[in-house]
Length: 324
Image (cartoon, rainbow, N blue to C red; front, side):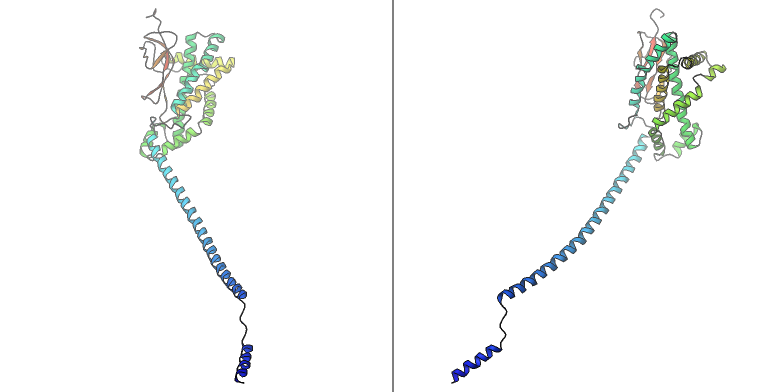
């Protein structure tokens, strides 16, 4: 009886107890919990990554800006130091400059090989000038172009500084000590292609292809007056004949002489060799004959600056051996 009672009592107690959840449900709950935890961690990492990425981009941008500022400052410092070295120092040359002195001399020599030869042929064959007179006419033309360009270049700087040309050097030594004058020269060189056209136009307007001083009979040496008359003759030849080659010669002389004049300091053309001077082979080349005494100058020698290094030899005709 006791055994039956115990069995019935245990059966009743078992009916009152809740049955446990299945193993599968427990596993699902565990997975959901872990997945939620994983997603939370993932979201936090993503937010942290976004924040760090934004900060990193900002930092990188700032670093790039600072590096750019540093490069600009270094470039400015380098240009300033270079300007101090190059200002009025032609021995330091910018090899990237297409209009540096050596290139200018190459173009100047091309004038002698091309336009000068064509113009000489026209003056001798079509205008019936003696060869010596034609050569001196062409020489006086390039000399006049050079002097005009140098004077115009000086006046340009003086006008910009609102001073007399004689005061330019004083101002440069006193006030322009940080490369400002060099920057002014560089600015003028940058617009040289345009300004050379203006120089040509102003030259023709002023000269009108005639030398007014020669016409007015102003005082001067016989040699100067002779040169002026020849320059005037050349002008009349152009004005009456309208020869393209003669126009090209004068225009090319003005163009290249302008590039010479705006160098700092200007490229120098030496017209000083006269009849009777000893022939200096280190500076001059012979024209059509050999000799030791100069008869006349044909083409000027070129120097980096007045008193500077020789860039290109001139050409002169020696006296014939019969005359010596």
